[in-house]
Image 1 (spheres, rainbow, N blue to C red):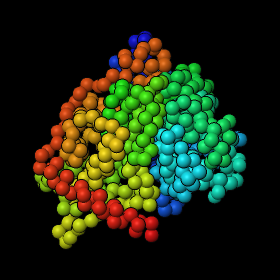
Image 2 (cartoon, one colour):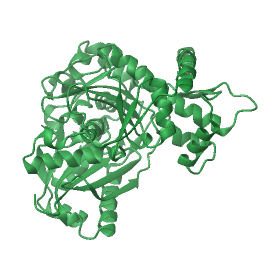
Image 3 (cartoon, rainbow, N blue to C red):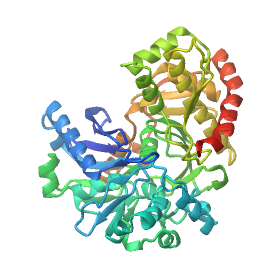
Image 4 (cartoon, rainbow, N blue to C red):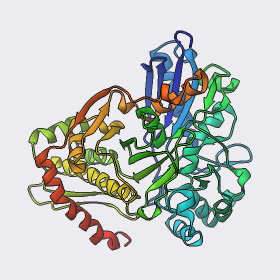
Length: 492
């Protein structure tokens, strides 16, 4: 590599677009984060317009160019990551036909149930049973409720791949993001015609499939003008956000595992072969590197529940509020929180589930609620470990990535709830954008996965606190019993 050459990773998240430029030594050169708004036109629905992603990508690049003049001209390859499962429908004029239906949208629950009934082997071939948030049930919902939109659809793609089209003019996706569509034969790493037909699509409406480090196209002249990126540099296939975070943390070998705490949360375990476990609602998907897969417990409510609770109690700064909770020194909140603000996937597959604070009295205050929110999020990870353990062991020590992993108190609660040490790596909060910058590097340098996708420098290890661990273990049965008791009421 020539001196000064850099790699760009762009992550199309749910709450923000994040862009990161790193140099040949993987040092951050420039970064930007631009917030995204989500529309909720009906209860349980969640949408964003694809044009919003393009606007925020351009804004993020402009902010980096302003902060570090000339930095975009040093970029030699681009990687894309993004929120998975979203349905982007593109018409014959190559324009979106409607807002994208996002991963945390629950409208297609009936269609998911119908697909599971019609295709009994679906979970074994597509990696997990159909659930409302996946792309395939959403297409089935559109066939019933918006048939004119589906009839006018030329292409069905995933969120980050709309940005790819505007950068390169190419319709393509990577294996991991395709896996999250529920339309992929995971073991064969190719589109599965049976389910494509079952939801009313044709194979030619789906994007070209590529492995994560493969070049999907090059920056067009128009995109160069719009973004400031050099014309002709390659854009690699990239990865869905879960696998991209894995690439960034070095979770690329069999048995590597980590917890991701973002808007949603995941427990991710790399596997050397395809190992479906549909009865536990564990996702078994293709990784963003050839010849690798992963198992994942996916929870719809991650660190976002802490931010939501901070807003409810009027805390202007979440970090300060969490420090105040930690300073109290309470082993556990007197309140129990079900954190299912967006429904839940693993282990419940229940889009109707909702958030509940239980056990409040006249002495309950805002910090009690915030501590309960942290604990509720941690309990979802306990359920995630239990789900993955139905198929095999989960490592005794886990890594942590994502913005939610930054706070020491939060990670101590997680470590205590899981009864496992948690490793935090330097730059672990850089997340998916860093991971796809690594994939971009692989595409142009000739280096191997072992050369590039290494584990970052260890920052610290957060150990379980004995008193907190005991208190959380004693509270866990109540947390689970609350969900069981309320499950039939959520549907009212």
